[in-house]
Image 1 (cartoon, rainbow, N blue to C red):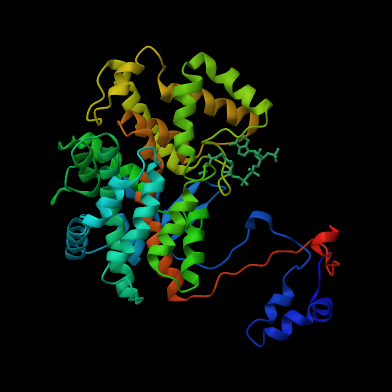
Image 2: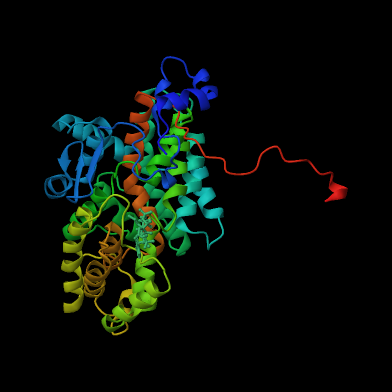
Amino acid sequence: MNVGKEACETSLSFICEDYEEEEPKLCELDQSKTYKGLVGIYVDESTITMIDGVQGELYYRGYPVETLVEHSNFEEVAYLLINGKLPTKSQYSEFKDELIKERGIPDNILAILKSFPRNTTRIELLRTAISALSLYDYDNYDYSQEANVRKGVRIIAKLPTILAFSHRIQSNEPLVEPSDNDSHAANYYYMMTGNEPSQEFVEAFDDILICHADHSINASTFACRVTVSTLSDLYSGVTSAIGTLRGPLHGGANERVIRAMLEEIKKKDNVIPWVEEKLKNKEKIMGFGHRIYKTWDPRAKILRELSKKFWDQWERGEVEGAIPNPTHKDEHGKIDNIYEMTEVLTDYMIKNKHIYPNVDLYSAGLLHILGIPTLSFTPLFAASRSVGWVAHAIEQLSDNKLIRPRLRYIGELNKKYVPMEER
Ligand code: COA
């Protein structure tokens, strides 16, 4: 039933009385419908990222993601997303210098990282560390846009340091302080290994970072925007976002993909029986499906190509430039080429279910072959997406409206209170 304005005026007059001139549009909403999961709902307008889920296109500030992957780098894309336009030469070098300058973390945050139980997941470490970091930010109680940009740059700069430190603490290895000249991508490798990366690693890792930098109002970005819409602070927004990203229906999917490949599927011949069994049991196949894309996710296409390149190298022997990962050697003979297994899975899912791969399917195999530990997959997604969260928080606050949807109450009313001794 579509509730028209007239019916609305009678039955919902109690709502409309509260909303004077600015809000009568509430009465024009279809009050009879519940939009579960907010499917198809536009909650605001944005100039940050555009996704065309039918054509399979993605644009950051109007630039196709493929163009940025080909010509740009993570730092430039971060500047673009946060500031709305590509930087000039001097703006770029100033921004890059700022990111380098802000890489260090306070000793007290390091002490917290060292104090956590060793089996804490890295995404939990990250969520907690980012929350604690606000206490050491001298702009913490300055809510101006300029201060938010400064805080945002600090969050983006420090996130890889927290990740690399967490990795080395959990692996009982000495910490490697951040480099004071490497790019964002190269510095991550450096902090993980203590060595300088190859050009091949840097280029591939940079592409991964660009592909994950923003994706409009996905669940974690929504959480971030909801948090800052209460006029809470940027650190709280990013902390909410990390907690939201963690779930397997969102950023946690990449870790599930690689675990399935390494621990359950293992061989190419097992792919079809494995997927058939999962689907028979009505289980979701991680790395497939998307709320917006109903075709190829353009990021999956980019990472698919890269994944092929590195898994071809694995077939031939040595992967050029990967982070040395002792488990890789053990895997030879025990698992098949993950890129090829992914291809079989993709082919099956598209032909039989019309469900396409998303970014997590191909990022998982690629991160693995680049030597990234599985526990760092989702946190690395956060490291890149922090750019989007910051850009969205700033956009939300530039024309803020408290985000507060409604929930349709379907329980009973006016129930009789029964004293405890009579229940
Ligand atoms: N495996 C199997 N079936 C899937 C599927 C998957 N990965 N993704 C969607 N479907 C099916 C659902 O079972 C449902 O079928 P039904 O209508 O017969 O019940 C239909 O497709 C619609 O899926 P639904 O979960 O309602 O869509 P959504 O928009 O709410 O969910 C995701 C989108 C991403 C949560 C969902 O596709 C999913 O869980 N994917 C796996 C997790 C993942 O890779 N997440 C990362 C996203 S970038």
